[in-house]
Image 1 (cartoon, rainbow, N blue to C red):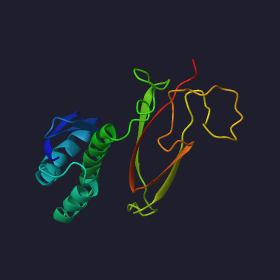
Image 2 (cartoon, rainbow, N blue to C red; image 1 turned 60 degrees about the vertical axis):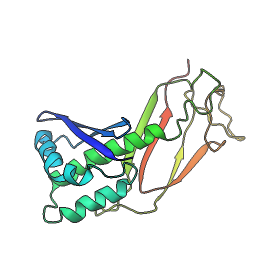
Image 3 (spheres, rainbow, N blue to C red; image 1 turned 60 degrees about the horizontal axis):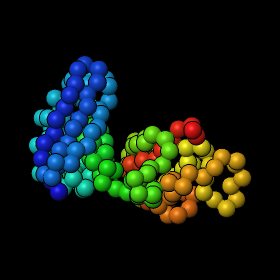
Image 4 (cartoon, helix red, strand yellow; image 1 turned 30 degrees about the vertical axis):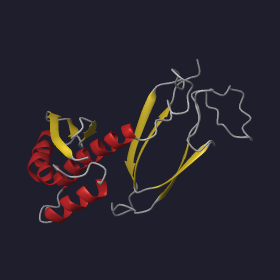
Length: 187
């Protein structure tokens, strides 16, 4: 599936990026807020020509292509614009990935609490991406209870909240991550 359009919605202080794929799937991202309107111009002039037509799921590949092609302009505006593309593509991928709020729930039900999405990158002290980083993500249900045999917290288990691994934690070997979960107070 290829990137069909890249749109920005910006003013001086904020810029949102919307990526649309060939099949109509969309992802939203945001660039850094410092002079966001300038970053939007950089995105359209220096990012979009390389990203349009690229495979939506080859995020590392498109970002490397942009770094290679724009090596003479390694400034912060380029990196901020790349972040908008990056987060929009991860948002699109996350929407197609396993949705833990619905995949393990009873028919017509979902886990208690609103959905939150967490984005990020694992970087070293110099700001370079860390390949094959191992992230351990632990998630409790909306009441703060883990589904684990040694869990002693008194909150009840939510029957519609379940880990994709069937346990209480999740492992992912990735350098960029997108994760969704539910978080709220127990009703």
